[in-house]
Length: 343
Image (cartoon, rainbow, N blue to C red):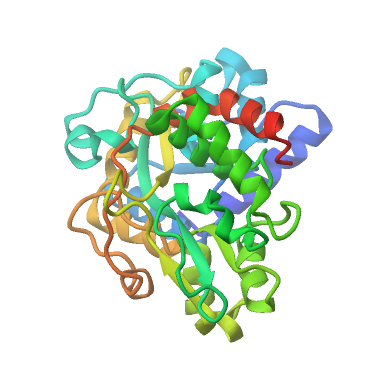
């Protein structure tokens, strides 16, 4: 498969959507992916899959929620075989909309840890990220070692974080609810709000840039944003990254909050068998390396190495809460943020 093919199909699909006409037809026996991932390494992964199996990969790319709405609108006529997105909270949304089908696969069940897959096989993690605490090493001599400590009044005016509607923040609070209960979660959200250095704004990279600029003393962000700053030249981050310290929280408790990029077989997949083969391929050592290195994430399969930059962050104990719980608590998490006035 030529590397330009996925981009061409994505462009045709985009034009078709804007024109209000049907998506381009796909041949029987292919596997059709709807993905919100946009990394060059993924194209190499798909071409390797085609080389190994003879199954052609057709790719439509888009934003997560747009792809979910598209699949809902297409209904039983959707050509989608596999849905790929970031964060278990979004996978939960797709599943709740009836867009994902149960899969029973010994390969997937043996390679993907229980906590990183749907209890009934509706989706499976394909790469992992940790949501951790970053801090200004010059400004914060005793950084918080737990998520709970982020709400400690001694950190008032230091914290920078994303908005309450961001899926990463919803999932983090969803995990807090699961571990500590509703009331404790509300108190924690209130503490986060009280400790903010500025109104929630921007993405994870912006929180890290805030530490470099001196506006933020503490930030919450996914590990791969920091790894990008270490590995490349990220404006406003890389040149000052040495001042940023990293804490993997809750090492004496539940472990550090983790989330995934994940994939599921579409409910109306026209090529279901090929879709399952693709998901199983995603757990191979070569595919895991592509996923991990494409976005500086962690592999989900034990024994596969992350990039040298990510490995350099150190090992940590991960939370083993099943990530489906994050979705279950998503609506309540948003309510709690709203109740305490966290924007």
